[in-house]
Image 1 (cartoon, rainbow, N blue to C red):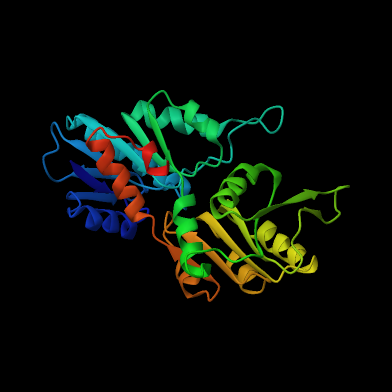
Image 2 (image 1 turned 135 degrees about the vertical axis):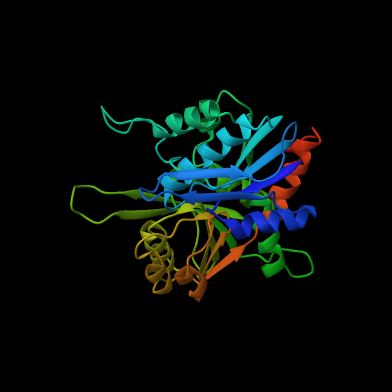
Length: 315
């Protein structure tokens, strides 16, 4: 088995390798003057089971192209099997036609990865489950829920029991399934925020379905990008009488003014995973905390290599 890291999130790749007691395979990536990407494997991979670790986060086009070039190089170097390990799958939010003449870019990216020569995909908390069906190769979609649940228990549990007064909140209707699963595991109540904009140019109205008064609320989402919706939802929960509001998000994109919004919001904490390498601004933020998913990804990689069940990780 070989692990090869791209440049998108080198610290995560190194943490996965350390967890597995391995070294990353030697490889070199460089750019020509016009920013063309050149990649070269510097050791033999013939007949090897190779895992390419490369989230397609910012800059999404560059990291995606680098992933494709790496896969092609490994295929031409006669690797036995190539698994694209993409903890954060960019373009996942373009999973359907939103207007009459818009693309389904998630499907296009799936085609590109498959045609480049990947034999399977290992990813984490896909924005839309149906994206698995866009691929003509096996897809393992890991769930971060158990990592978050363990952190909640370590933080809040008293003598192994979650105290009364905890509510899991879905910040939109689309995330209800994810939030309900976490609420069931923690044996606590569930609330949903229903967002609507009555007319163009008017601010969103947030209706809260469920009881949040005098309760500790934990919002659960898969992607936090500009953080506008998350911070507005936190404000709505506080206005409705919530005691505290914390958010857990699988992928911390945190673009633009997101960090400043989080820092000035009613959120107590925003906990994200290291699926995307944090920027210096994110690392220095007081309210943003990171949880590592390297152990989860390492366990999935070793199970794939040994042809063992991956789904049993979450049973």
